[in-house]
Amino acid sequence: MDKGLFAGINADVLTQENMSLHTTFKIGGPADYFVVPKDIEALIKAREAAIQAGLKFFILGGGANVLFPDEGYNGVVIATEGLNQIFLEKNGLLHAGCGAAISDVAQFASSAGRAGLQFFYSMPGSTGGAIYMNARCYNASISDALKAAVYLDREGNVRTLETAHGGFDYKVSPFQTNGGIILEGIFATTGGNAEALGKEMEGYKADREAKGHFAYPCAGSVFKNNRAFGLPSGKIIDNLGLRGYTVRGAKISEHHANIIVNSGHATAQDVKDLVSLVEDKVREATGFQLEREIIYV
Ligand SMILES: Cc1cc2nc3c(=O)[nH]c(=O)nc-3n(C[C@H](O)[C@H](O)[C@H](O)COP(=O)(O)OP(=O)(O)OC[C@H]3O[C@@H](n4cnc5c(N)ncnc54)[C@H](O)[C@@H]3O)c2cc1C
Image (cartoon, rainbow, N blue to C red; front, side, top):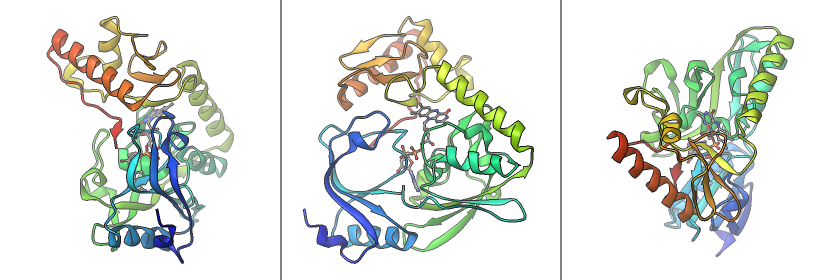
């Protein structure tokens, strides 16, 4: 590994960094390079350096929805955590760097008496990851509040994508197919009461805690919901008696059947085997093919 590849770039560069340290599953072997740019220019340069060296790269936000292989990642993981500026314009438009924790963005907006993002308080992950996944909770999708996203396109040009132009749907965003790297989210907020918003957010956090979200390492819901199934995926899995079902270190959460937890020393393979088992059982029992939400890197 030659860190010199990234010489002169304003970034922290590590080699052979275990991805288990950077994912909420706490699973994943070493990435050849782990690069943490300190500003947008550094991210752009790190991407170019990887491409020029013929290395593949992966953009990592909060690591709350990904499963890295046990063998690690043969390439460059570019982590966005350093791009975490948040600011509010007088007109209520809130700008958040892609690496800002979405929960911090919600907190920032609410403290300033601005509503629209409070639903995402205490949801793990970054702003870029939430936009990429079009994260959804408490009946709100991130695209409901997102006005525009500034991103780097496949050719390396900085562009702006207006949410109103479409491409967002339930847990779907244009970035899942256009190969863009989200640099900043621009959110439309509305007037609210800071104290009331604060209380509302504490309610969401308490609800997540009660549902065991933070009891064990996990990546949230494993499967998307699908109206055509008639029931939420977790309920379908639960009805098959799979709650608590274990494949080595991977276990279906006792709290919520759509969550797989790392109950100790789970490997990526343990999780994948359990995911396949659930898919098979659901298909056999109902004819439905579950759609995976967590991303296999
Ligand atoms: C306890 C727990 C509870 C959860 N609850 C919910 C929930 O209620 N609702 C929900 O929707 N999800 C939930 N999740 C899943 C997760 O929080 C979301 O999917 C979150 O939006 C992922 O963001 P991230 O930054 O961690 O993304 P990562 O896991 O780092 O990455 C996910 C994908 O986004 C891409 N990506 C990340 N940043 C960028 C960027 N800047 N530009 C382009 N691509 C990027 C990555 O390449 C990857 O493909 C939960 C997870 C946990 C652990």
